[in-house]
Image (cartoon, rainbow, N blue to C red):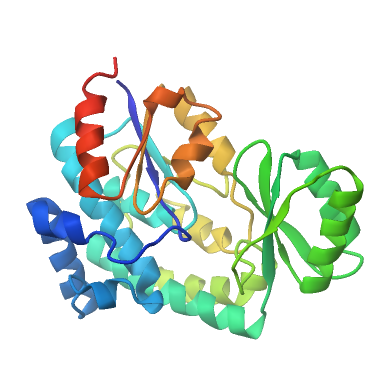
Length: 305
């Protein structure tokens, strides 16, 4: 089994997430306690952990807690990727960034994004059963009415677009007119991974200068470049990430080219695991966000050849 890690982004967080792991898994508990110290708040308290203000740091803390458990049993993966926020978890797992430093950086990043979202509110929608060419054309047409961009190339047939209400509506109309049946509005008030996040990107550029990054212990594929992060350009890539589309589909393909034949999503939800099913065999895709899914992985992964 050649394992690849997928680190969750935002969107699938749930109430009481991680509480069962905190009670039953000592390594996870130590990780969350370390997060509490780094952030100067009690991350073991579900009301703190589940507070929307803390979503980004909670997801990173949860993902790293799970990764540390898995690492004990299986060692380092062949490679990893994460979706957006999940890249920070992946870099921490690869020893490229200190866990406490990452949490403080992610806390500030989430504030910058909230501020940019308030100053430049936007909308996003997922376009299903389509092609990149079709979406790119819709964005081009939509741009005549208002700002609209491709934001997330999640699979070869699911792409998220984001921008102004007018631009999104015009792009949606174009897609419907050209036979695309499902354009699903997302519950978002910010247009992540578009130029609407320029203010957040500028603030992150200043903040990240003081942060130390190290050589990565294994390849982490960037959503922005579709290539492994390099220590000398990692800061700029993370700055650029906020205003450029994510290419998760490419990242999964890159992992398979490294030899990965089994993937496990670490963090809330199974979105990335489902995206990966387009590239990796169904019975070689897993996710862990609870004691149940952890034990399921422990028993099934040993059977994967």
